[in-house]
Image (tube, rainbow, N blue to C red; front, side):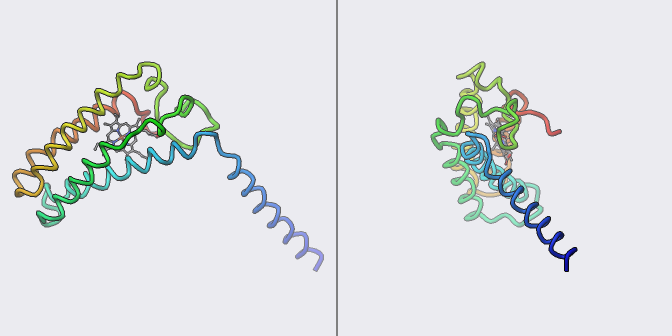
Length: 158
Ligand code: HEC
């Protein structure tokens, strides 16, 4: 009985400590999560279109057009509130993120990379529903724009 009570209170203590640690996030965590959600949308759209382009799943014109339209919409979101100063990966208070300080140090240079994606996504949005060949030939520029920005502004995975 005695032991059970001690164990019980240890568990309660551990759970409470966990809650406290989670409540103490950095001041920019919501903005970081919002921009990462945008990137997850990019990734889901491009990943599924890539699977179609490679023949891993059947080409479906309607779905391809929808995914490309989604990517195009996501690429055109206003992003001002997603990138507050201090929300880079050098501050350990921040939620897990891989945004290099260079983004802010060289701003607005990153805008060129964002524009590259917008241009490529606009073409993909008009082409993706026009057959497998049209999808394939408009995917490359999109992938290139993702990689170009990651090479410059995203930290490598640890
Ligand atoms: C203008 C620059 C830029 C472009 C263009 C860009 N990315 Fe990123 N991406 C970043 C940065 C910076 C991060 C790190 C953000 C962070 O961790 O807060 C990132 C993070 C990500 C992540 C990880 C998100 C997470 O949950 O941690 C994914 C997935 C991703 N990008 C996919 C893509 C895809 C797919 C494309 C092209 C369709 C793309 N990105 C285009 C700069 C860019």
